[in-house]
View 1: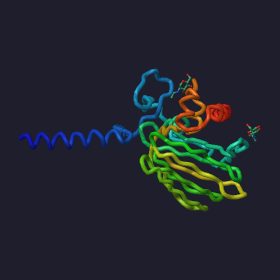
View 2 (view 1 turned 45 degrees about the horizontal axis):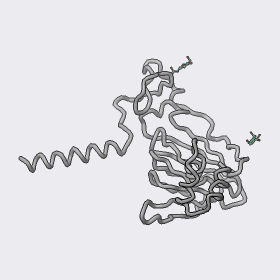
View 3 (view 1 turned 135 degrees about the horizontal axis):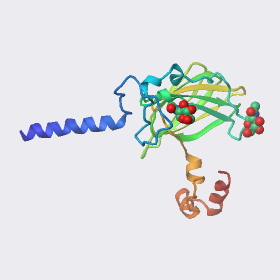
View 4 (view 1 turned 180 degrees about the vertical axis):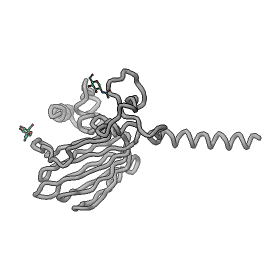
Length: 216
Ligand SMILES: *[C@@H]1O[C@H](CO)[C@@H](O)[C@H](O)[C@H]1NC(C)=O
Ligand SMILES: *[C@@H]1O[C@H](CO)[C@@H](O)[C@H](O)[C@H]1NC(C)=O
């Protein structure tokens, strides 16, 4: 009996943790996000199914090149539940990323999603870093048609390693993957993290920290 209970607890534990590791499976055909609802749930509330239309499942514009005239040479066009309400509860989203020649997508992480990309134009160096204690850099140069996956939560980056524009289409395993850009989070938080803390964390002079902070 005790053994059975122990077994049951183990199964329950496994089920619990599996469930938390994924976005919930929808319990209906769809749940179109209703941005007007004031109810807070883990996701968004459903629009009345009787009022749902084809456009709720639709987004247009990923054929358009983004504006990469910025210091990073980068443009990110997300298609998450915020742009496409039909993604609500489905655990998936898309992105187009444009790179100017030698442009970069700086080190960042998606707290809720694995990201899989394919290169449509150009060539990119991509990489991610494994978690502690190894912090191993896994990196590769990709060409048109190549596919690469960044595992959920890991810090990753991309760099255009060519003199032409590069374009990537990506899919993410969350309707709302989130993005934490390491530099912005650490040096550009609001209010700022004290420079003393950052100086000690990075083992550099406080002046250097203030210089970096001024860039964010
Ligand atoms: C939210 O409210 C706006 C303004 O009242 C309306 O145009 C829009 O259709 C509403 N959206 C949904 C999903 O009900
Ligand atoms: C691209 O962005 C830059 C910087 O924000 C801006 O000056 C420029 O007008 C934009 N170009 C287009 C075509 O929108």
